[in-house]
Length: 332
Image (tube, rainbow, N blue to C red; front, side, top):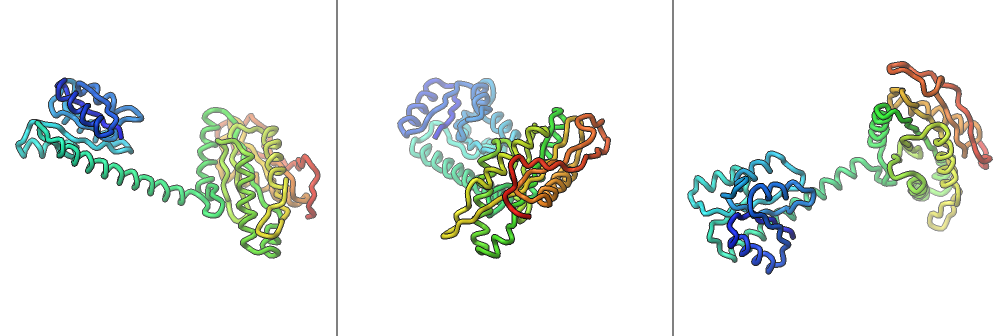
């Protein structure tokens, strides 16, 4: 545990350093309030601070107020060290944001007990933050596959479309559908179907970049968001994903299930403001084209004219182009 101490008196500061080091704490030592404030602004700042009330630069009281006004996510527990003993002064310190106080000259046993109380509070806060993050992740993730859920992947796509327009880069969307998934459920059972969905999700994640977005759009349908991909690159990326899905059967218990997928691709080009649902609609049309042409392939639906749409213009798009780069091996 790292503890910051700020004390302008050299002997008192050295005494605190020695006591805390003997107790196993890592000490960050400051001789004035300005140094303490600077240390508390750092990303890895100590979460527990012992501040002298009266210091040059900033007083302990001023640091309390500034720190509480800033309201960082990670809480800093503040123990004020003071020679003041009037109740009015102590109330002022607590109202400024101090968590506890210790009157000088302090008793070592009392200091140790107050530090332990502060550490317990910090540990409880860390547990609460972890629980909140877990709940947040559960709200954003699909419970079966661990991918983004429908709402979250739509947010990812919207965010990337805004970024792409601002930075003048294309954004691609892929709609992927597992072929004949109902037959898998009917033939092997829903547990096997769940295993297929989980394995297909894993293969998808392994075939995308770290900054791409992969979400379960619904049932056996997936939405993949690929920033910076134009028509040429999205076709090759989609074909790599298709091959990853069908490269080997999925083993579910004692059965082996061949799996293929169809992909529909669409790109929002540079200088085009397009709503996320409009881009999805284009990718969805391309997906149905792929399924009509035999499944287990990639189809693309592109804009026309490409890459030259003025702001605010409603784009037109060309017919879907089937671009299966390897022969489909699954009947319609």
